[in-house]
Length: 477
Ligand SMILES: *Cc1c(COP(=O)(O)O)cnc(C)c1O
Image 1 (cartoon, rainbow, N blue to C red):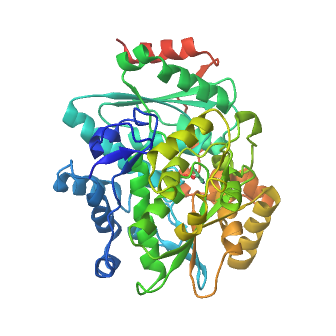
Image 2 (image 1 turned 135 degrees about the vertical axis):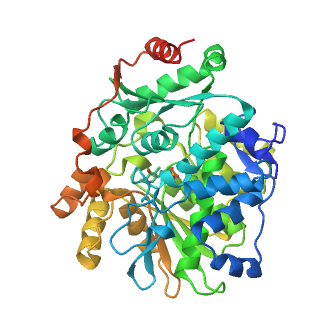
């Protein structure tokens, strides 16, 4: 399988060539040349597979430059019950992503049982193993520099800690993450993990990271890389659990399922789109946003209108506080019939901060054919949904999952199971849960003392020179 850029001006590349990079050289995002399609008979065989077998069946369609035995070994090492063990009572960790049935036809898909209690562990844990493998093969190393407002940074650190050939420099705002999220990151003491608390806000952190990666000489000398949400391997790894959930929620391939997905950068739901393109019988893909409703606006009106940082709201589902959905370009490419010239024109505008009107270009009619619908949630609805779910089912859900459930229920149809993706566990967002139901969420016993653990963190002013100096001194060359 070769990979092409959504902007059509980069040479085709293999999986491992795009694994360690970010954007394509022409500024686009990589996508496979075509989507493999599973027949009904193949789906029937897959129905009986374990998570690891399913992951191999899907990933091996997209990865042909890692020997099959090695790919299998990396998958088997990643998707273990031990690695995804923070299951709820009664769930089997061997399922890796078990369904939690709230009532007949309404399920949560537990994606947050990995080490950092958010769905990003599903892909990031695999990425850690793929990176280590490929870097060793190429006799290279990488220094990942990133900024986080919570879930991404911790997932990246827990995936990369102890890995050969990889260092992680992760910037986070001194204030802004929950105490749990901070403790999760700062309590990591692995020598290849560097926590940097910036005396500023998340945007300051992001600006510093951008400045470092815009310095070509520094970037080359210190082998600076990233693990951001546009990484194709992350999207790829996320396709697997749509299949797993579909098989768990149905008993034959004639049935359809709808998925509600709490969305920010459009990575998670983009994997759902690709699963559908591969023949998975998905009825609706329901994009749920919070108050930052750039995606909901698009699916309602056909206008994609990214916002700037000043128009990004800080909400109680902070991992969806996104003003520009970085993976959206992948879906847009399919929506415009894979016409790269069109995407170039459109994203020239997007990159200038302008809106693109797909409808007036005659390119929006197709969107229904892809099964997408959407809705936006808000703080009051989120709190109400957490309360209702607790009262009705005795289940405490986190704020992001609440946005997904709230919006998903509006599109629920009789006879079609609705699966809501649980993108984090409530333990990460204690204050919000306390506000919703008047008590703190339960927490896995082994994490009881997380906030009291000794911390490894460097405090830094929002100063690019200081960051570069720190990175250089730690790498020591
Ligand atoms: C990252 C994240 C999301 C958004 O996922 P995207 O792939 O960016 O759309 C939703 N919920 C939680 C808890 C997250 O960490």
